[in-house]
Every structure is written in structure tokens, then in C-alpha cells.
Amino acid sequence: MNREEILNLLPEINEIKDGSLREKVVKVWNDAINYRQWTVAELKSIPFTLLADNVKISFLEHVRVVCRMCIACDDILSEAYGKRKTPVNRDYLVAGALLADVAKLLEFEKKPDGTIVKSDYGMKLRHPFSGVGLSFKHDVPAEVMHIIAVHSKEGAGEKRSPEAIIFHHADFIDFELVK
Image (cartoon, rainbow, N blue to C red; front, top):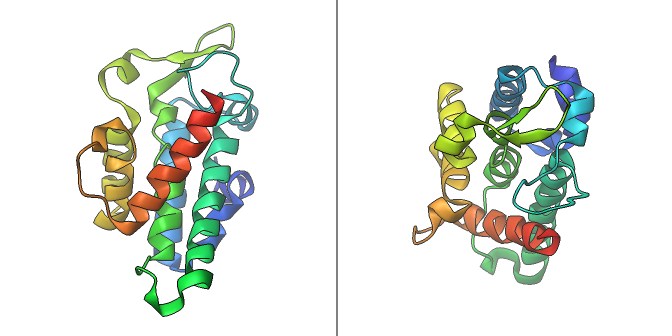
């Protein structure tokens, strides 16, 4: 898949001001998409979770909505508290929001009949681990990999950065409402 197709699927990538980080996010997505040769149509139809029945929200919708929720949360905190707000690196927040679930594209696989299931790979390695691995390969900053690593149950009990706190709660708002 080419860069423009990825940016069309995930226009929030353009919210990342740092051009180098923006390109790294595109490259991670490209690797994840190519791992199982996902098509644009398949990417738009993958359910965002396999942990609930009859999920009507797609994987891409979830990624985009949670990213926008993170941006909105940061905006509201900035508006309310100004300089008193805990500093948040917006680029890291957006990159982390866009990459936290990218490795579900490795965790899931499509059966010949088109249904999406958890792969054998996914049974052994959940997406936070694979997401960090993919991101490390592309020299994504440790601050962003931290968001990926601690966003789910694997991060329980770990100290989270401000960006990871915002993402974790936005992600679980969306997940819990669907579940």
C-alpha cells in the first residue's frame, strides 16, 4: 500500500507536526498492512475487536475516533488550565494513538471465507508487543512506544506518561461502550 492510501485511510497522521515522526508512523502502518496483504476494503471492514459479538465499529473507525478523542481531551485541558496544564507532547500523543492498535493487523487474519479471526500468531503475541516491535524497527521514539506498550492490560500497574494516560482512557471509553 502506498503512502497516499495510508494518509487517506488515516488523515489524522497529518496532525503530527514533526515530519520525521509522521513518516515513521506511515512506515509502521505500511509494514503492518503488508504483513497479511490487507486491502483497503478489508481494512475498512475489520471489526475493531474480536472480544465482543456483533461489533458494528470498524478497526479504522476505532483508531481514528480514539485519536480524535485524545486531541480533543488535550485541547480541553489546555483551554481549561492553560500553562498550568501538565505538559503533553501532542505529536507523541497522536502518534501513540495511531500506533497503539496497528499490530492488530498482525494479531488478526482473514479466513478464506473472509471472516476475521485471531491468528495463531495473535494467540501468542498480543498487539501491544508487536506494535512496539514494529515501531522499534522504524526508530519511533521511546515515548511513543511507551504509549503502545502500556495502553492495554499489559500496562496495568505501570507508571504511564501523560500521553499514555490520555490514550489509555480514550481507548477504554470506546472499547467499554462497544463491549
